[in-house]
Amino acid sequence: MSSSSKLKVLLDSTYLLPILGIKVEGTDEALVTLNKLWKSRILEVYYTPFSILEILGKISRVKYDRNIVCTGLSLINEKFKLIHPTTEGYMKALELRSKGFKDLIDLLLYVTSLTQRVKFLTRDDALINFLENQGEELGNIVHERVFIERYGAEKGISDHHG
Image (cartoon, rainbow, N blue to C red; front, side):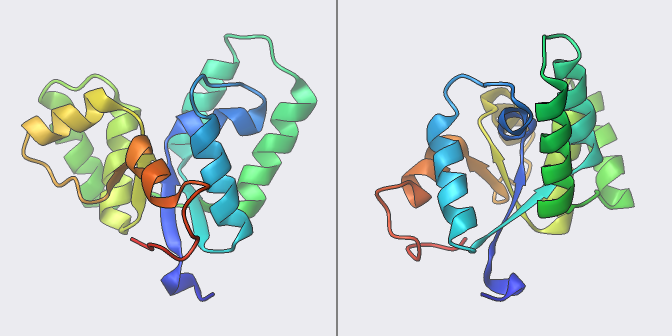
């Protein structure tokens, strides 16, 4: 399958933590769905340096297995694609932050997805509600629940691509 016809998804940090050995409650179904799409070669996964910064911050506060973290970081680096927001995206994140949303990393993930035209998989209702209340574009966001409904294990792999 060509790169242009693949489902391109930027993962929220929630879905990267398990790769580094940190279980996140309630993500199993989304992770199984991501794995199914990955193995079927219809998924292209993206990450940002902000995600790595965020997950390292979380890992630093808990007991972790150095080998698992090291292997997970290598896997992310080798198998996923690194992307960054545009300059305009950085400015948009700052603007949204000034309107009251406290999590700058979540805003950076959102604007990266928006400016790089990839879907943003998240379960962050607070972020989605904030963006909706600000009248922001939400077409790039795929809520975890919708993602599972659309692509979950019981669905055919070729059901949807967007």
